[in-house]
Length: 327
Ligand SMILES: C[S@@+](CC[C@H](N)C(=O)[O-])C[C@H]1O[C@@H](n2cnc3c(N)ncnc32)[C@H](O)[C@@H]1O
Image (cartoon, rainbow, N blue to C red; front, side):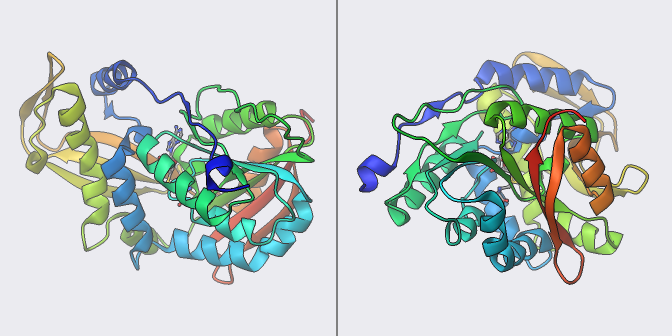
C-alpha cells in the first residue's frame, strides 16, 4: 500500500456551529455557568494543547508515553495480532506510534477526534510514516453515538479502543461509565480498551500542571472565549476573565474555571449574559481515579481487567480492559 491508499477519506460528523451555539447558550444560562470542554479544541485550541503536553509541569504526557513505551510489548501480547485500533480523542497522534511499534500486523487505525483540521494533519502524517497501515479518520463527538467507517476487505481479529491522555477524566464518573458502555457497543464482542488514567496525587503537582507559570494552560482555557467570539458573533473581553485551576478534593478532580474580573455583560449570538465580579464559568473537570476506583468503574461498564500498570512514581496508570458485558 502507498500513502494514497493508506489514508482513507474522512468520515465527517463535526458538530455544527448551531450545536456549538446551543451548547454555549445552555452553559451560560446555567447557574453556576459552564461551558463544555470538548469545544476547547478548534485548530488553535489543539495547537495550544500540544504545547501544554511539552510543558515541564505537565507530567501526564511524558509519564504516559514512558509507560506505553515500556509496556508496548505487554500490551501487544494482551490484544493479539491484526487488530483494528480505534483511538478516541486522537489529537496529534503521538501515543499511537508507541503501540504501533509493538503491535503485530495491525489491520487498521481509526483516529476519532472533534478537531477536524488537527485530525487530518495527524492522520496524514501517520499514514505517510506507516504506509502499510490503513488510516481512516473520523471527525465526531465521541460522547454521541457514531458508526465506524466501513473498510472493504478488512477482517480484523478484534477491535481495540485506545483512550489515552486521561481524557476519560473529563467525564463525570457516570458519564465515563456510559462512555465505556457505548465503546463496547461500538467495538463489538471480544473488544478491548486501553485507557490512560491519571492518579490522585499531591495537589501542588496537580495545580502546577493545570496552571503553568508560562501561561499556556491559561491561554488554552481563554481560547474558548476567543473561539466563541470568532464563531458565534460574541464580544467577550478576553482580558476581563482570568484562568483558575482548583483541586476539588471531595470529588477527586481538578477544575478549570474562567473568572470574571469585573461585573460585565457579554453578548453572544444576539443574547446577553450578565456576570458578577468573581463569577466563574466552569470549563473543565479532570477526575483522578485510584486504581481500585477505576477498576470498579470499568466493571460497572461491563469490562474485565486484563492488565494495569503504573509508572514508578505512581503518577499515572494504563489499563487494558476486555468487554465482557454486564456482570
Ligand atoms: C486531552 S486531549 C488528549 C490528546 C491525546 N489523546 C493525548 O493523549 O495527548 C483530548 C483530545 O480529545 C479530543 N476530544 C475532546 N473531546 C472530544 C469529544 N467529545 N469527541 C471527540 N474528540 C474529543 C480533543 O480534540 C483532543 O484531541
